[in-house]
Each structure stands twice: as structure tokens, then as C-alpha cells.
Image 1: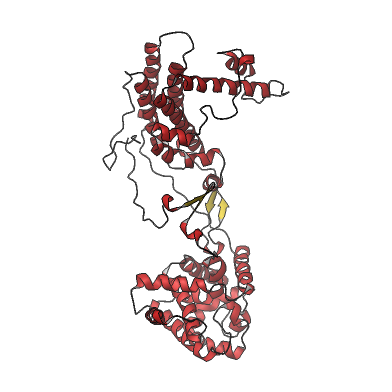
Image 2: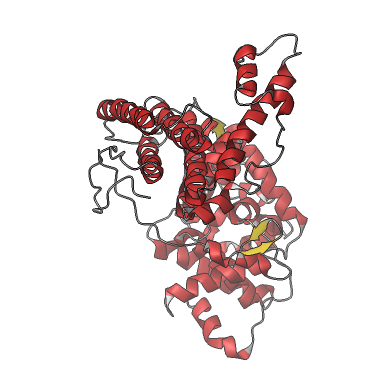
Amino acid sequence: MKKPKKKKMQRTHSSLEQHKRQGKTLTAPIMGLQNIHLQSWPNERLPDVLWAALLTQMEPRERYLAVFRAISDSALKYRDKDAFITHSELANVSSEDFDALMAPVLSDADCKRTLAPLLLLERLPDRAHWAKHLQQPEDREAWSQLAQAILETFPHQSEAATDIRWLKVRFLVVQGRMHFLEEMREKVEELLDFPNRGDMRSVRPFIRSMEASVGAMFGDSVSRWCDQFWSECLSKTQCAAVHERAPESDFDYAEAAKQWALIYQQCAQHFMDTISSTAVDPRHDGTFGLALYGLTLVVSAQKPNGTRPAGRILLRALVETYLNLAYLVGKDDEQLWLAYRKYGGGQAKLAFLKLVDVEQLPMYVNIEALEALANEDLWQEYLDIGLGHWGNTDLRRMSEEAGVKGTYDKYYGWPSSYVHAQWGAVRSTVFSTCLNPLHRLHRVPRPPRLDFDDVSWDAVALGNLLLDLVNKAYPGLTIRFHLAESAEGKAVGKV
């Protein structure tokens, strides 16, 4: 059984160590800046330069950049006016000023054909201006052109989006509404001559940061139009469902099942070989009980559950089983073993007392079996009910003290989301992404997930770790799941 090779990821995010802890919250470094205001390019600014987004679909790139340059050069004529090139601001200018400002577009037949989809939008703020110059488009083709333009400019760092953001900043600089310190002269000249001057690795981020900094200059009319744009697109176009492919897995379920049966049998036999008394033995029973319980979860987490949400829930239960045993074996304290066992008996008692007087029991409950568990070691009238953790700690601290924090970090957090129905798990299970760019990649319900990445690899790895702990407490259990080496040359299953 060979686990797929891990893909290399380019780091574009802060590390966990760089986050600052404030109480029970970890805050990203950038959020520690004073007076930070979050903005969204696609939600709050892109629809207001929709005409420019459409023009970015013209080829070659130099052609639409020349139009952008010509329009921003004309800003010199509007130094004493508030005119700007967004739809919200163009709606406020006279027809004469609109025609003069947009002359490089209106005098080009190809540009006007490219901009025809603007007339699809009934709420476009400056629609009256455009309607005088553009021909009504054919709906289906025009919506497709609009969708393609949004797709190319939706990522705020894309080439097309950066070009539009450059146009906005350059217009304001030429118009005299943006001012810079003298020591920034070279940066300004690089901006004005974009993309023909300077190192683009620094020029492009500078353009984007400048455009974002002036995003709040133009009032509420922008946000109103942007909201209206996305609402109109939603009402007039259909969702496009994504067709997801099931992850490929060469996990050999049949071979794993054969090995599991033999391992479970030998672990149970090792229990019999190492038993020394029929009296209550929290250490012996706890060691083998947790291991055999974990092995039961290992086989349960395989086909068909391994690629379903249930697989993540089973994996979460499996890693908790392992962490409990690792802590108990690591401490190997008689009182801790006893505390673990008494706590479990107390929880059985608590469940029994809550259910015994219920008129209609849930179908999963056998009340007699539950009562027997509560009374097995000690008559329940003498048994306390623990309301905290049996070891007066938590799993994270237990993993640290047992020296298995790496396993905790790998397997506990994300599967816990599925147990607690947190939004990330819910989102990944029952929603897919609409592929219509005009719908902002929103979420739509999908059929139940049966195609998650298989947890069987990790379940078997944790199973081997449980067997290691049994062997540490009661030497002589050497059987393990046999796994081939992965592409990196590391045995799959080592954590």
C-alpha cells in the first residue's frame, strides 16, 4: 500500500508561530496594525470599473493598456473637477464630459463592441451615457463575455486586475488628487510608465497597495452599485455546478482487512498471555481495551467510510484513543489508570440515571447493559461521577507530556471540526462552488460527499502506533500493519 506523494506548497501565509495570542484567540500579524480597514476588490470595487474589466479581454494586452493610458492622460483636463473613471462617478458627469473623458474608447469600434455587455445591466449607474454609443448585445453571448471578464479580473493580484488598478491610480495621480513625498519620485515614475519601467515584482504590489488605499474615497454610491451588480447577475444567470472527481487511492482494502483480522486476534491473544489475575486490573484492561477499541475504529474507518464524513469522525475518535493510551503508558501511574477506569464507570452511571426514567428510550440504548456497566467494578451508589476530565487536564497537554504533540497536531484539530459540525466541515461536506463567475464563486448544495481523500492510510498508521504502546506496556506483541514505502522513502504509518 503506497500513499500518494505530498504536493509542495508555496507559502503565502503567516506561520502559526507568527500569530499573536490574545486570550483564547490567535491573531494574524497584519491584524495587529492600527486602524486597519478590510476591503474586497471583487465585492466592493471591481463592479465599479466593469468597463475596464471588459476591455482587458481585448488582445494583445498592449492594446487595452494603450487605451487605459490615453484615458488617464486626459485626467489633466479634469484637475479642477471631481470626475473619475468609475461607473458611480461617471454617472455624475455631463454627456459632454463623459464623451471627452471616454473618447479613446468611444472612437474605437472594437472597444465599443467589447463594451456592449454593459447594456445588459439595468442598474448600471452611467448606463444612459453608454446607451448613446453602444449597440444592444445578443444576451447569451454578452453574458458569456461578461462572465469571462469577471473570471479574469476576480483575483485581485491577477495581471488584468492589476492593470485596472493601475489605471485608477494613474488617473488620480495625473489629476492631482494623489500626492507623494519627494523621496518616492522613482516609485511614481515607475507607476506612470507601467509596465515598461522598474522591477514588476515591486511595482505591481505598489500599484495594488495604492489602489486599495484610495478605495474609500468615493462614498456609499460605489458599494450600493456593487451590491446591485451582484444581485442582478444572480437573478439573470444560472448557477454552474462543479463536477468534482473522487480522489485516487491505491489503498489495498482487502489486504488491510486480512492483516487487521490477524492483528486483532494476536492482540487479544497477547491479552490472555499477559493476564495475571482475574481481579480488576486498570492497567492491563486499559492498555488492551484502548488498543482493541482503536483497532475496531481502524477497520471501521476503511471502505466505505474512509472517503465519507464518517471517516473523519472515526479518525478523530481513533486519535483520541491513541492520545489517551500514550498518556497513560507514558505516565504509567497506578492512580491514573484507576482514575481513567473510574471516570468511565461514572459516565456510564450518569448516562443511566439520565435515561432510566425516560418514557421512550432512544433505539441505540440498552438500559440493562448500561446499568451493568455502571455497576461492574463497584456498586454505583459508591461511585462518584466526574464532571471534568479524568486526568484533570486536556488532550493537548496530555499529548505534550506524553511526547506525542506532533501526532495531536496532525490528526486532532481538523477531524474535530466534523465531530462538532463546525462551519469548515459543513462547508466541505454539503456545499460545492458555483463556477459561474457572475455569482462570485458562491456556495451551492451538492450531493452528500462520498469522495473525500481516504483516511484509511492515517487510520492504519495510528493503529500501528497503538500496537507500539501495547508492546511498550506488555512486551512481546510484534505484529504490525505492513506498509510499503512512500515516494519520499519514508514508511507510511510513522508519525
